Length: 419
Ligand code: PMP
Image (tube, rainbow, N blue to C red; front, side):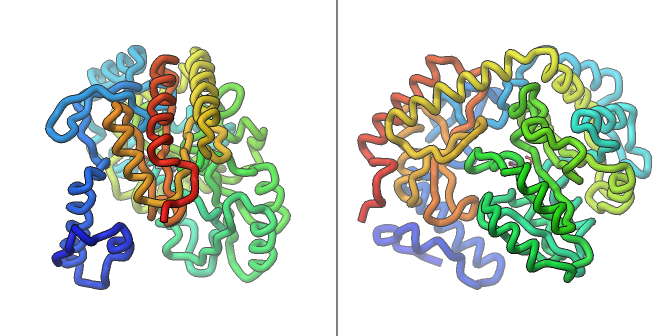
């Protein structure tokens, strides 16, 4: 399908027409071409160095060093020598892969140790591992909730939660709106076999935190269970990095916690912790666990990362110092950073065009950020998302703030949408 780029606008691409799959792909290709032609294709940028606060990128065929605010490696653990060493040793001892799914020969001592350890971290009886945080949510929900049940979701839960709820009834409440949650719970009454409230601990696009004390109270008062995805809270939030469970002291009150090893713990993989019976049920019923090969021996690196959360609290202290410095700088420019309480800082802009332009100008200034827009957030809620790390230096943060000052002067980022 041909689109006239000279007159095309972002509006032309908001809804992909109802065509067959290959023609939909053709149409989408025109969108990618449109973005590229405008210098806005800031996704899947190739990085030639490891994950870190500064990376070398390949932009328009040229290598350039950029300050990076795109990584969930909040504590810098992907590059921690002790974690790398643990991982190398595990691979030397156990080899490169697990060779089978867990029920039929792919359950090894390193999996068991990690399950025990992550269950202990959340003060729960047992844990199950998945190969990603995404499947920890989607597979668990798909396994637990069917057409007789209901999932009650905050509007801003992660995409993996939505995916897991395709076989069940879904009601959504406005983000962190406790009156609406109560109304939904009241209306659900006894109409469903299982009622499960699902929230994120830290929200991945806003960086704000669920009102978990009230959510727990409401869920249990109305006979619902509660699942919390603490992907972005683990290792970051709470006095000792115990995540939102620690912040609210809700150990034992939340029925199911899910999370990922891919963020503060610097690796890959997902987990669910809960009572022993529920975990055993998942181990033999969750299809993506049962029929999929387990994580590699490199998971031993995660055990080391969990040690370091306790043994090296200075990474978390450094991270929070960096969060405060960046927030103060952005606020001094009059930018709207919402209500973040974590290492995710959104600079809220609104429209897609200015957001993409801001991302482009920042990249030109050597600052790599993520422009976030629909469908990750609502259409009028586009923003530049910044992920800050413990390993950013004060000088790097100040450069980021200066770059935002220049871009803000050009685009009035927090001003009204241009006509
Ligand atoms: N939950 C949340 C809240 C997330 O932000 C993400 C990843 N962005 C996931 C789950 C999925 O985790 P993973 O990347 O390990 O699949």
